[in-house]
Length: 71
Image (cartoon, rainbow, N blue to C red; front, side, top):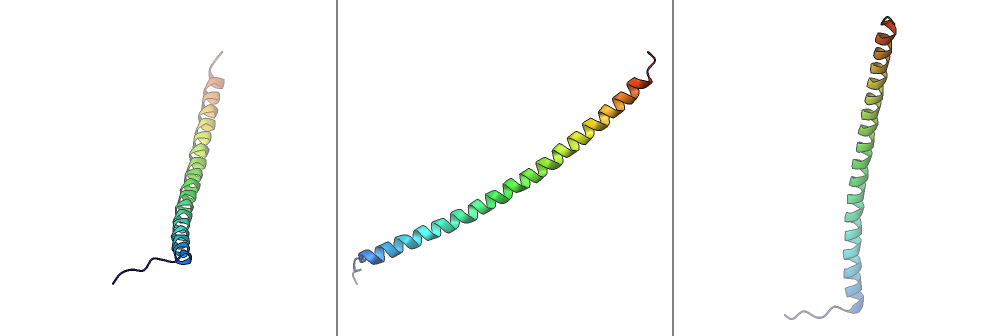
């Protein structure tokens, strides 16, 4: 059996279907990337908060020690 050539409308439908599939795949990938970026932001906020708390605690300790030195 020989395959008949696709009509122009069938060819367009096939191409549009393929483009829709690609668009859906890109959407899933972008959603995944967006979730990863959100996770990094949350983690970064925690790290910055811990660092600030540590610096404040060390600064307070240093001030306390220096204020008790004779001088």
